[in-house]
Image 1 (tube, one colour):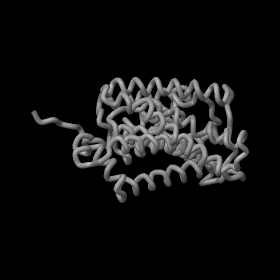
Image 2 (cartoon, one colour; image 1 turned 90 degrees about the horizontal axis):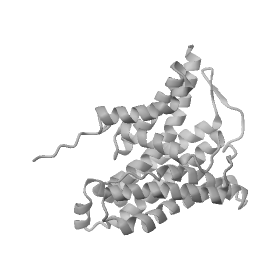
Image 3 (cartoon, one colour; image 1 turned 45 degrees about the horizontal axis):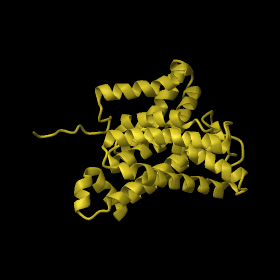
Image 4 (tube, one colour; image 1 turned 180 degrees about the vertical axis):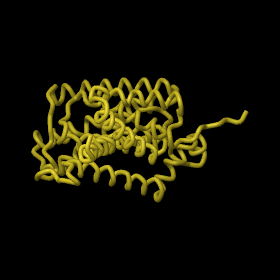
Length: 293
């Protein structure tokens, strides 16, 4: 394999890794604020693309207002899901809440099929024009949008976490819900905002990739597994680790195609998930929790 072809696979891996990072960030935000795994996160990815297509084709909005509609609508769906489905049962234990997120995933998928139909839909590229050439490799203009949107989302999230009172409250909830409540933090509000942020991040991933791969009502489960694997690989609960995990997983998948076969691409994420859970369950950047007895 020559260097140009290897660079092409690396670019593809970085593109997929950026998408996985956005989905993994959604898993991390919800886990940090609630302590549960939200298995409906992949459906927020689906909703972002589908709502944007709906706004563009049915409502007649221009492209970028349609994208904003997709993000805002999905964030609202995340908030409504938390308020109506999870909050009334928040004292039922983590396992019950996790099972409810699985039910939420099935419900959202079914609703999307009835609302938008079973066919694959696509958004137009955000920027028209031919692909770019980098050292002989081809970079689609939409891939630049994927990277840019991921970078902006990560920077905004980092600023919110480190520079704002909301971010400090979210970090406090990640350490201890009970202590945060005793310190006067409205933990219910933080959880609701966390779900809205996670849904918005998933939506950004969904609409960014829709011009490249199209979208449909059933894309959520697959991308949800990839995002979950990325979050576990990096270290669940840490936003930086989620991004690192997503990029690594994207590169691993792409290199598996380069040196093995595309047949193994989807197996890689599952293999990585199992390997990390067996060997280093806290992730490559996570710290093992030790309890003093």
